[in-house]
Length: 225
Image (tube, rainbow, N blue to C red):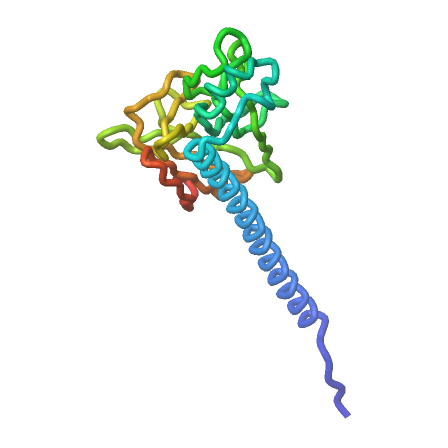
């Protein structure tokens, strides 16, 4: 009677095929997981920008909690007029966060509110940080770029000059956004800004697009785009 079974070669081929299939599944799962995490961070960032817009339009009160030494009369006259914004920074020096939500409230010296639409993190006046954010799993802001009137392309790798900081601010009564780059005054020639996020090896990218009308969206980016 002839016995049936697997030969050693057949067993090795079967095990090899199973190992290859397992590796493919794990690779695709890791990419899917990274893409999900990147998307979550992108949407969190866009919601933070929307939050600044809501605060600006809804005139959220500032001042009395953050700067209690200011007189009551000053708070009453100025606490509801601060712009709100989000500050972005590429490769910030720790412990500075890559982005934060702030009130452009100024300092406690001669002027309570400077309203320059730029986040002031040192000296006077110092703006009020409402919330700061950090990234995990190697995710980072990989590029910032702007589109100017009437039209221009937006490629952070070719921006001139290279943009290292970006401020997006909102102030009552308009839901429209204003933009400031590299710590300069607001630039009304900018019609749109794009914030690029990537994973550690830059194989996955997302971008947050904010235009001057106040529209905010999260969009995919082709690798190499």
